[in-house]
Length: 343
Ligand code: NAP
Image (cartoon, rainbow, N blue to C red; front, side):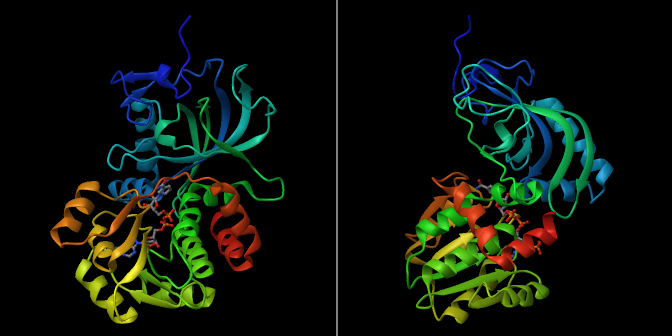
């Protein structure tokens, strides 16, 4: 009998020897191995960098977007955007629990959200019911497989499942802010008006306290007022994150110097240098954006003689789902914002 791999390498078709995330094609046969979980999928939350790329490539045409999503999954056996390399997450109902899957308390029919990327999740889409062009969510009829090491969260019974999906999609970001920001820090959030932007801004304000400062960078005039109304930043700066000099001039002026921590939560490429230039040499840049280029960040920092510490935005950090669900539930202004957009 084939030896089971807890990371799902049994399902890698090409190239051999890599793990499912790096594979170009995986086996999406829905007859599960004993150490896997089978899920009836309700909704995919495509990550924002991927969804934006698909939306732009299809000129906002939902029919074309549907075709593109179906063809990616057909070709790769998973929803991994070939340009951004990224995925997203899903919610669904447990359909079958393999006899060696670690959590045997899961019941058939129970609603869960996967906390591993769609870019490694075997997926079959039978039908796309609808694409919500404003919030990155795609309602489908389909099935998916979670590997032995695949983490998941049960959907709280008292919360809307689409809201939970939206929040958990970016749970790593506020949870990392919680670890990175200290009392008295100055923090810049690039893309502060977005989904992870508001969660990170809230968490940064909590951690930096009134002795620190949180500066939001947004690219639309209306977002300045939105963030002020929500009281989520001490200062909001209007600048295009792809224009490093513009961001540098405005943030340095607003803060009277560089910041201690920068959080990048935009959904477009070419924003690495904005973050590096506005951050102290001794500071930290946290690149959560999936449109981040390692080469641009590493060589760009070297090129301007910056010794800044740069962190790759791991989507997972211990306690991330609990922190994020608790944040959304306990902060009425954020809950309201999420309800408006995702339910
Ligand atoms: P989101 O809600 O779409 O927010 C992105 C924000 O960036 C929006 O407010 C957007 O403004 C802003 N923005 C876009 N272009 C900009 C520019 N040139 N200058 C300034 N701001 C700009 O996205 P999200 O769901 O929070 O996700 C944020 C990022 O995290 C994405 O790249 C996503 O793929 C990534 N992500 C990473 C992980 C991980 O594991 N690391 C997991 C999930 C998601 P407009 O709306 O005006 O364009």
